[in-house]
Figure (tube, rainbow, N blue to C red):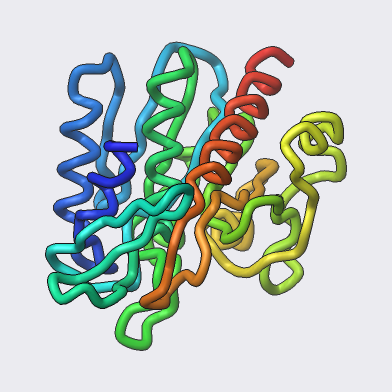
Length: 243
């Protein structure tokens, strides 16, 4: 849990992602990885040598602008307070996804990760600016894109905002969904939706990763649900690696 708490403590409001990017690069510095930052500031990380890679997607930014968060753990719940004890945004949207990406890079021999900047709306600008600006060729060697940026615990978004189809029916086998309690649903807008809108021809989805009340001061994470999400995505990655 220490890694997760360290991520939560970083202020990464959209447009201010430098500190969390530096943390991620430092955390991964001892691993044998190819880490690149594109012209817009997105991070692309590759582990292992393969013709194609299961690809994990998350975004580095958050909506909150909070310094000196105190991270509170009460049994299964994690939330944040300021120095006066008042609840403040945790940044679990989408630091839970970043945590999952880092954990999976530790766990898997073959993996690709895309960590986008500027996913949240800022000063009236539309969101997903990082994913709308990247070179789609970054994903030429991706088997599929699994984004971890959905509230709750049991949903795999297969159709995004605007009726954007993200994946084929049966993309993730039903027995894997059932094992971890997940089911397909219709969801909102995030990076994989923006990529599909731009013409990316890869199966994608957005997966619940245990956070609630996103964008609000009473945002929180249920750690058991985040762990279940990690186990679920790990199983899906293995499924594609072994196909």
